[in-house]
Amino acid sequence: DRPVWLYSRSRDKHPAVLFQQMQDLLEQAEQQKYTVVGASQDMGTGRSMARLGLKQMLQTVKNGQARAVLVRDFTRLSHDSAVLVQILEFLQDHDAVLITTESDLRYELHLKGLEQHFLNRAARKGCRLPW
Image 1: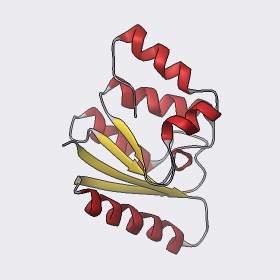
Image 2: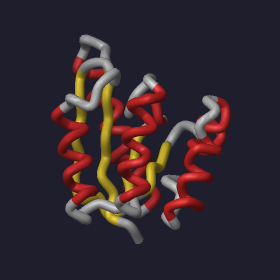
Image 3: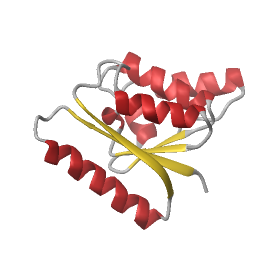
């Protein structure tokens, strides 16, 4: 049982979209009986790492208080492959996983051509996969 952090992001100007995302994550966490240790959210694009909610999530993972992050899909972290890789490598380095509620993370990474990067990195560094 891994302690889970909930993270949502939307660039929609209507806060209701972001709130609904978080509500959906809370419901999913309850259904799966996850132990939720915190939550954060950001309004805006996912093109950079300079987001308060993202920083809160990463700090909690770094401190070992969260071992999994629950998101709707990986694009909530970023649409930008370089930013996405940076976040997933951070999770991988801290023995944390990303759990997506609306997509198969490994398949999505495969489609983006990123799955093999993480398989190779796990073998090379002797760490777990971030899914």
